[in-house]
Every structure is written in C-alpha cells, then in structure tokens.
Image (cartoon, rainbow, N blue to C red; front, side, top):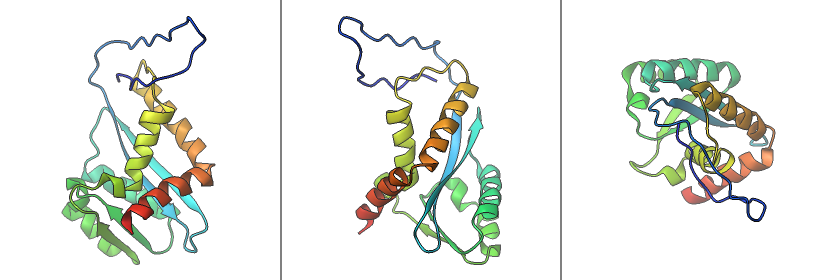
Length: 168
C-alpha cells in the first residue's frame, strides 16, 4: 500500500508531495501470462489479481483454467520455481492439457522471466508515486495499465524481447 517513490518532474518551486494514507499491510497478489500466438506474430498479456490474499495453488489452477479458454492450442509455460507451480494438483491439470508443457527457469533468474519485467514496469514505472487509499484502487490502476499494455504490441515485444535476449 505504500508508494514506490521515484524522481519526477514538477514546476520550479513546487516540490511534489506524496501523502500515503499510513502504514497498511494489505496487499494485492497476482499471476500473469505473456502469450505468443502460434505464428509468433502477436503477443497477449493476461493477468489475475487477488486482493488481501496469496496466490496459492488452487488460485493458480483457476488462473490456468481461465487462460486455457483463451489459449486453444499448444503452449509452453515458462515458470519460476514457486511452490504453487510445483503442486501436485497443478501438475495433474497440466498433464491433462494436450499440448501444454512446462519449462522451469533456473533457481533465481528474474531477469529471464518476462512476467517479472511486467511487474517491474508497472510498479517502478507506470505506478511509481501512486498512493492508493484502498486495495481496490490498486486493482483499478493495475487493470487500467494492463489494458494499456495489451494495446501496445511494441511494449509487449520490447519486454518479451529483452527476456529472450537474456536466454540466448
């Protein structure tokens, strides 16, 4: 709930002041997926947010089921080594999905994960100096920025390409 404070521009003599609402331990957890079309011509960004809750295996399973409605053909899931990704129910679901497979990233390699780049882009870029009053304000702002990012193939390609360059 506390803002990420970054440098910003302001008229001379008018220092911008950020007034957070106070200490709060509320949070919003999320899961995201960057999907490349079968011919590699189009990228899509999918996101699910959970207010005041951790993203555990059963929530991940719901996200995957919803993602499956949008991704009809084969898919390769490139995942970090989160506990929810390794859960038996999640693995069982993925085995049942024809054409879906998992590739695990090295133990600690956030620079190889395009979803981490999106979180950084939102948190340290688009939502820097943002002071939400409620968890719903965070959800609204992230959804707005997600819609904006979905419309920008250039941005999606830039973030995905930066991670791809790190892999090779």
